[in-house]
Length: 529
Image 1 (cartoon, rainbow, N blue to C red):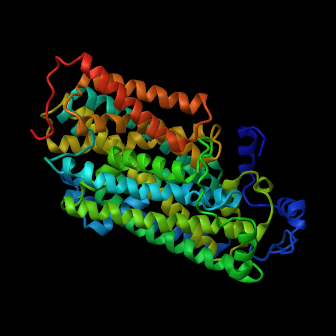
Image 2 (tube, rainbow, N blue to C red; image 1 turned 45 degrees about the vertical axis):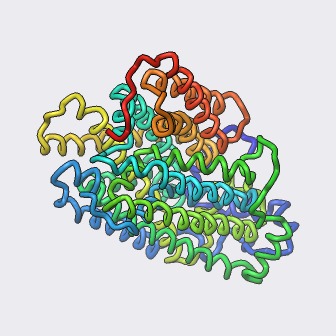
Image 3 (tube, rainbow, N blue to C red; image 1 turned 90 degrees about the vertical axis):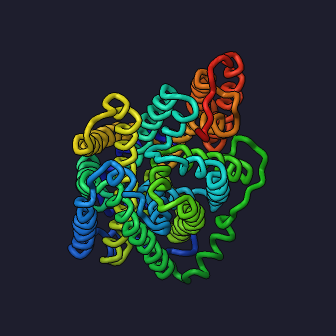
């Protein structure tokens, strides 16, 4: 694991584990020293590699979900339909769509790898995610449902002015596209291992298929395909969990005995060290600030909340999604612990932790189940990608183009919205290729990129909601300072990403409030107008 990142990534080109790779894992000293020999010593494992049944399941999923998404193209007549699904989506569908939108391939392959190397302390961050959702319900959603808003950044214009709206929307477009590029890259890890298509071709296949139904069906297609994809990847993971239990000699009892002895089931860490990312304090406090920013200021999630039939349904969807996310992450972390009990070798034996789960699926799962689990991982990837494409397109059109051409007819705007979706698909594809050569542990890279922007965004929104003194010029100063602070934390310090949003938001709010006093002659508008 101490090799340079580009050397570790080179290992991805070995698509299906060979006899030599299997032997390397089996003969690792850490594995030979364990009493449980869960893996056959031979490279010729009876389940190694995908067969026709697996490929048929994967192909059936890819074709089926694309055709299902295309069913909604005839309903897209206006921008309200294309970007807000006509504001006629039930709360439970929005809740599942939120879960799918914040669950990517990063989650499914990296979270088990994280638990494989550590334990369950990441769940402390998820507790913070739930706290953040409660804050949003009381603090942000009442403002979002005053008026006919399409994007989160229209709220900023109402409070401060058009310039700050453009700045916040621009920051969203920049950082969201960068973070999604890393997430799209993560797809190549799975697809290249499973299908042998190579990283670039893998990224191109998933991007193209997701683009088809997102381009045609808008947010309606995105949400309803999210619902189906959530059921697929959660159901597939449950099947995988049961299968791993049967593959480990002694079953669940042996797994819990070994994991407990190694402290793998530890959830809470009350250490006060600021350098540990997953302590109770960093998880709950940092996670709450992170989610308040990601779900309260990021168009990716706010767009779904605005598609609800009303504020109460939006609140219900948001809170229920938090409960679902907790159980989902607990499921993925448990899979990682079970994989540790199965292999009993350091993650370095696989090249990198992100390869452990997909390698296990391809080489050890019974045929049919392997195909189902690969389809489940692709479902998470496509749901996250479709959400990003539609949110990036909506912000581009509503926050920028609509100001330049306010009197454009609806049909022209619809054509342009679809072209914007195509444009962002090409951008994400290009960024994923770049990430192919730059990314480390992908789940943390994605969270780090998002955290750099979230501190500044959250600080600006809090300035607008909580104070009357703040004005546009002061808020811009605060935002630029807060973003610079988070950028420094990312590039120049060892401070864990879990603290970045809190620090950045505090810097933005404090400096923005102070700077506003220097520009107090500017007239401040009110949210309630």
